[in-house]
Length: 425
Image (cartoon, one colour):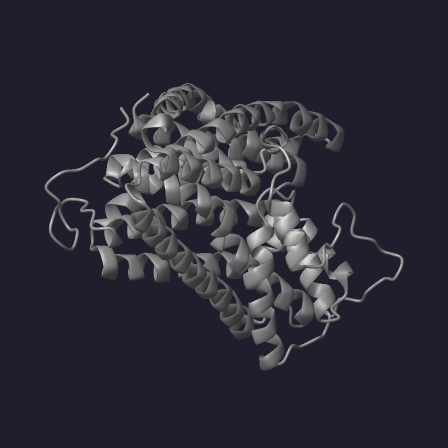
């Protein structure tokens, strides 16, 4: 299926899902809508399982091959340092944007949330951040175990070590590199088959949410949701504008192309579902395989800018709702804490809520305030996932441009004589 046709079908699935979900919620009783949501969500579960089936071998093959083919140790160190710098700056900007907007709009003012000591926030266990916890979570004890749990952070760490080792042994590692390179092609072809189910998955995911919860949950919390989505939109504008200044207007062509995987991430609330499509779109745009296969997997572990903006926005919102106002110094401390704790989000279920719960305890804000977010978190997660996908894609293009790559008309700089881009048909 051609890309434009797939995008059109996904949009049709989105609109149809909203209409069907609203009709069921309005006309059917609660028992029927609950049964419908439970059964139709099987389609979403199957699709996400198919995507997760691809993620681990795709990351391992692309990242290891990307490192092994990157050229020399100097180039590897340079690309890694640029990637790290980019992610730190993007993280800083996202948290700052969340803090500034929530302080200007004050969405929690007037709520006066009263904490019930008997209430409990289920399934959310705050984890106090420590360097020890971060390291022990990041380093895998078994790559098979990490793959079985789809722990992206641990898979990335293993792949970096494996890629550097193959790079170090030179020609002796070429047979393994060739096998992994072929595996990457196989995974991308498999992805193209799985993506044929994307439109029906979009329909199932949206219709299930609307049928069970109705549009009322969107309307009753529309102000908060609207202000948060405004925050994400502003974050998109800032980071894409900076990218245009660095790379050139051609980056807008990439933004347009990434809309398809971003839409998939939005409707499924999973940035993982968009990983294969994002990888393909970046290579079609002109980012070399060795850059995108190195930067993108690392970005999925360390550059969750949408989630970081949400964490800063949500912590201040809950504080406002509980009539607890943090000083400027405390908010600067909050920024530094989130810069660290957010780097351990990858692979943790309901990661944003876990990080928020852990952060609330640092400022004596009641954890029970999470109740204010629980009902609408699935809708907020949609925006966070799409943002993570878009900004990681743009970040990969930025690193490629800093390495001298040229993306055609509208790109700043002089084109290279040769290109090692890997075009995926």
